[in-house]
Image 1 (cartoon, rainbow, N blue to C red):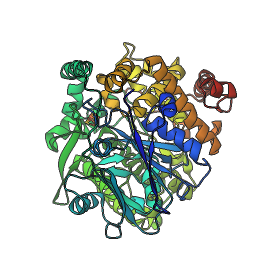
Image 2 (spheres, rainbow, N blue to C red):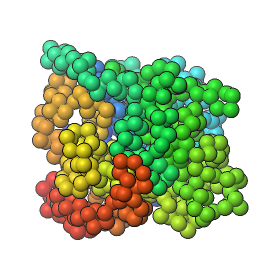
Image 3 (cartoon, rainbow, N blue to C red):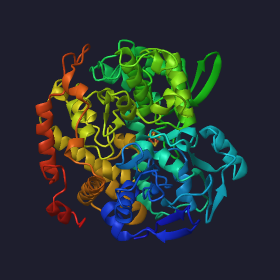
Image 4 (cartoon, helix red, strand yellow):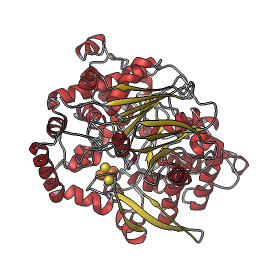
Length: 601
Ligand code: SF4
């Protein structure tokens, strides 16, 4: 085996910097990226710690293919105990930073402790420095990116937090290269709690994979697939933006804080209109021929703004969920989320919850600086500015929808699972997503088990999405597979070119590592159980594995899923079956037998 990975451990309290070799017994059982980092977190940290305390660790973790010529394999996971809900958090991101980090020689960075004053870390191949960042504090993410390039190296790649992370907003993101977000679970607040404003990296050491004819042949095969794949063409042409049309057409596009599942004005925020109205050009993550990123130009109040995005999720969160169809306003909100360092999904959905409280008469203008009605783009933009400053109602928005609605005595208006706002697939119209949300190890999340592919795209039965049937098995299998994908650093959108068999072949042709598809999927199951164990030890139980009450009680009002609710009894049956398939007890706790079988204990 040729593989040699290195971990950089940086303690911000005592400024100690240590390099460690990655342990083969960990990566053979938990892989790299999300798996390796989750195992490390469980072994080294008390899951009950306050996520904003120095005892929490913040890990940036790459897969084994980062920095290699294999396309779409340089993604990074940010793993920590999340500030939003106290669950194990892992937030996925691309851009150029991960590629550069691997070329500097590091597969993982583990940040520990807390700096006395704002700092940033400068990694220049072997040289690693902790530097003063007081001049960066208060700056937006693109300002930080530009300043760090000036003072380190013009080719440096960066991760940073904006004002949201500094002010410990529980929905703060970590931004990569100024416009890619490790968005979910409040990882930005964890970084802010450590007084760590940014990391800049310059890597020139290269990645010495096996240089063999087999690797060359494999690359030829993959690039042929890229050329022929209809999915790749779709991603390159529209990014994720055309999903608006696809999901609205089945009536599973949540609107007005999930009051409905169909948005009349969807064409205004759909991919076709994005391309026609605001798209400047495509962008890509390092070495990715799919190039699904969007660079757009919009106008707001007569000013021109250019930035990365939008994505499907933000077109929904700042669009359908808030009832806003002004594409320029929606995209500008996406830009602002990146500049201030917020998670777009949580921010948009929290504003939607506030609008819902207002329109329901629960709060009035005495609670607010201005009326906040659904569809009011100007109110949304102003609320984002207030949230970044944590000023007035903005202070509550920065806490996320659960804390905001609880403050006003109506937490059921928060469309969240385990306090994390649900993404843009209404489970009333795609039943598998309900179980996927309820059982996700990081709270409401669509990427841990994206059942939409099986329930909508890969079936001839148009009613399959509305059946409960075998969805427990589908969710379990997708969760295990996704844990593998994330732990190998592979982009989820590369599902159009790679399968699990490919992952085994890729490990062999790059590093001479023998891990069969069966072993990889077993690793996925092991990772899922380690994460669950962390959450159980952090105090989470079956009662947290549920959905917002609205989805059980209020039917979708219009569109192709009209009349659909999420049947509570069916949900309970699915959850029971899911626990059984997982080998967990009736409270959702992994049984000793299962943990022993997986070698976790
Ligand atoms: S498919 Fe898109 S998000 Fe994924 S690595 Fe390529 S450019 Fe990045």
